[in-house]
Amino acid sequence: MRWGHLPLAGESGANELSDAAVRAGPAREGVGPLITAIVAVVGALALAAVIGWLLTRRAGDVRATDPKTSSDVDTSDLGLSSSGPTVVHFSASWCGPCTQVRRVVDQVCGDLSGVAHVEIDMDENPSAAGRLSVLSLPTTFIFDADGRQRYRAAGVPKADDLRSALAPLLA
Image (cartoon, rainbow, N blue to C red; front, top):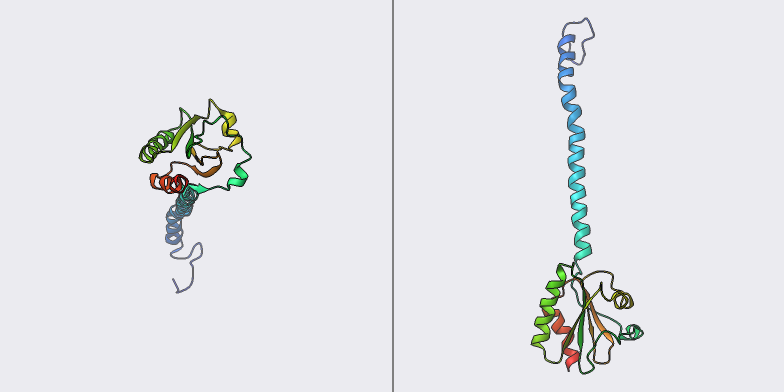
């Protein structure tokens, strides 16, 4: 066989080449789709992890709200304290993280005198949840003594963040 020349049928070495090609063919055909499938699965998992991180990175952050826009909301049936700030959190019996919020809020309200705590079951009072635009559980609000919404947190807030938000309202 000459260099750079493929043997034709009937030439010496033609059968060895075609036998080798037949043996290598199916093994090579399966490798491409397998690698593609593995890369697709790894890519999908990486994308899901990034999306999950983006969706939960602000969970539990206590964010200030504009008291002017929240003063239009009727809060008369929420049981807010008129002598100091009130922490209101919406929960439900089926909400797992709501028990964590209850512990954190109870701890903070116990540490800071003059702070009231109201827990509202969303299933029992859906109208209050609707007025305050509660879209997920748990959701926590901080109202000042005048009944204006000052802070809001979706998710489980950190105790230090609640204390920091409540401190100026107690002064």
